[in-house]
Length: 507
Image 1 (cartoon, one colour):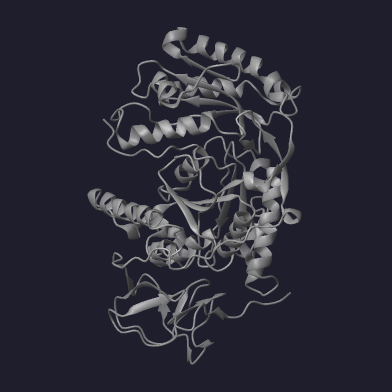
Image 2 (tube, one colour):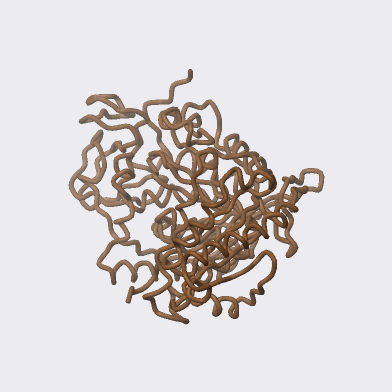
């Protein structure tokens, strides 16, 4: 088995390298040697860095020395400080246009073509709640439909309850939180992976279902219905009525069949969680190459988690297809700086204890690795949380870095697949869009093979390249979109990961 080198240098201008395994004191590193034990994935200074001096990785700033750092020293939270970014932005100065593929190279998958022209990769019936008060009713309706009840309907993937803890005690129409929740509900109600939808409310909540129907022009019919517990006359009767409504929908949903659809109909959520030092070196760049391949086919990749591009946003604005797209991204960064300040937080709060144990020191370092999921294609659109994504190619959606909330927004925006990279290991899945999980390192992959679909750790040993792994991931997109079951689906994940972002005061 090919061994990885002792360390990885990402750019000649960097003043740190990254250890590929735990290194003992006095291990030779370039022109120096380690001065202490350095954990795997952590950084080593290759030259002296004075107090206040820049620490550079990926040829970019990742922090400042909080004390004098000697050559060979372990560089991490104990000797690194974070400062908010302050940079001049360029727009459209690094736009690499994607060459369209010729007809004979166009790819397809087997998807569910809906009446409105959208294409689904799965075929669910969804029970969507307007408020926490109707969560129990929705879960009881969905729980009724186990394997025995669904056996006569082989084309239906399941009945799923999408419940949440908000919908009332919030500012009303016109507020950020209210509008975001309504976009989420509309996005799931019209999602092409849902063949049928029942919306369940209480009746007196702030988030009125009728307002949603009016705002988005939704019409009730055999495969889209609504009800309120107060109007039906109680919880038990609501559950019974909901079960009858689903029973009526199942034969209709089962009529849907998979047909050949172009890869351009895929919209993939680009996500990461439980990141480590290898995320930005193996899995994320490989996913970025898969995104480039998808963009060349006319498909769409949706990057999110605004706090996790902080410090790397200048690289994305350079790829903006228009100045307006770049300005929208900068506007999101400014909003988040203000948002964290108002809530007495810091943009550097984002790296979790697990991230730091895996070698990530600041949000700047984490962001530079996270942004790699977006590949090299032009940035064609920037969207609000849960807003419908209409641009093709590489796009960005505003969201928090909290994975369930971020993915909920991406799915509401139309993503029919999710691709999730992880270095520490993540037990994450999503519905109605299935999640593909990519391990950043071979050690974690071997420990969690039941959870990981792809191992990108072999990039470190030279057994494969970023481009080859990206091609592998892209080909998996097509197979999963055609019905291949992912590891998270096989374990039944996705019923509890619907978490709309709660913005604003709870009143």
